[in-house]
Image (cartoon, rainbow, N blue to C red; front, side, top):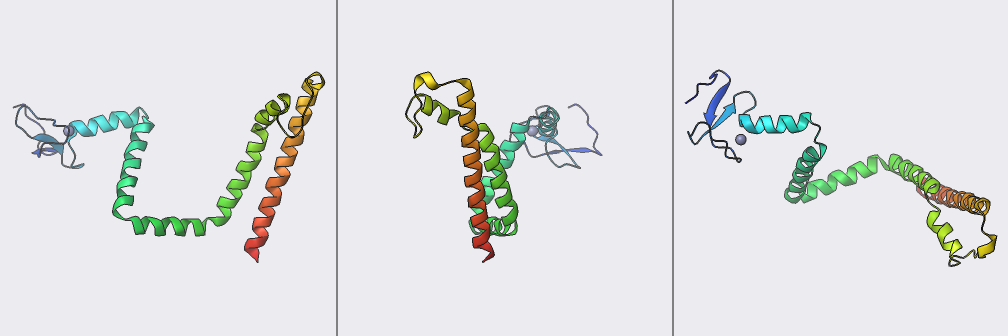
Length: 159
Ligand SMILES: [Zn+2]
């Protein structure tokens, strides 16, 4: 058996990946970190490579498990955070809406061009300028709707 630094490592239970140290049927484990040495190395290299999905997956799995084990606790935490961040959530949603206004409109324009929307445009009338105008009109309309909604929500909550 290859010698190892006994002040830092010890031979412990075989890890879940089955990293057998020199046929001893045991895994070399770190005294400081407790885990299997090779498993830690795998985790480290993935982490260093910024394999974000790997980390995310782990986190997601952990969250799922936690939720299954403590459903009431999770509900309470979510409720509490929603209550505490109500204003931020509202602000975020409103800003998100404005952002959408800038990117949307393509589908609407397409519908207009095909004569299926509420504003029918004849084929010969369509010019790039008209499309641009329609897009601006739609953007303004959507922004005003979003704004109205936001104001309403604010009023209702402050009452
Ligand atoms: Zn291992």
